[in-house]
Length: 205
Image 1 (spheres, helix red, strand yellow):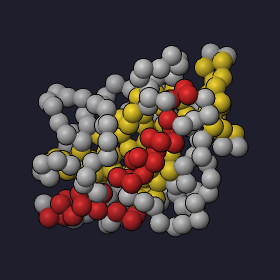
Image 2: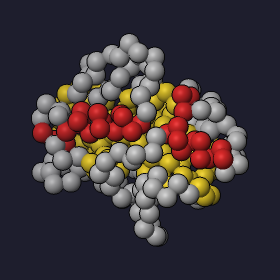
Image 3: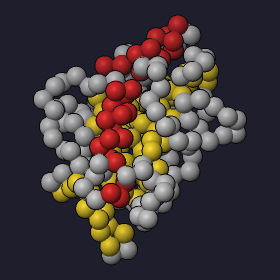
Image 4: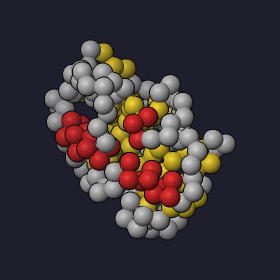
């Protein structure tokens, strides 16, 4: 994800968001999940929205998902984007998810935010708010019906059988109207998208 978000600091389950000398503490449910299985992104989607909208102060009460980045073992996310880790052949290899939100209809100075889940045994971490808006995606108001595993099955049927290094669920802003896509990263910076509505598989650049 190629956004230009400023850094935030998390302390004891509270994200301290520093912007030009000001700060905001956004308390979230940062409890530890002892399960070693990561729920599908379609399940985490609603939980992420509920978590960010229920922060102690109503700063993100109207936040809406822009994208979700799936991360494999060894990968990491920073305010500038996510980097892939080890390759995986299945949905179970994605151990963390970072949700990116728009924050419309808010008096807050924070126009976007992120919330990360995992890797096991971690659950949701702190909300991190950012002043710049993120303008590369169309809002995704609800989770797609297609699961990550179903998208990978379609990808394999289309002949793309290599290891997967990252995946992003997003609805690109343009140039043409689209549905939410699962966009998979392969070796050599090759990307293929699976349309969550039409089920079409195509190259993505």
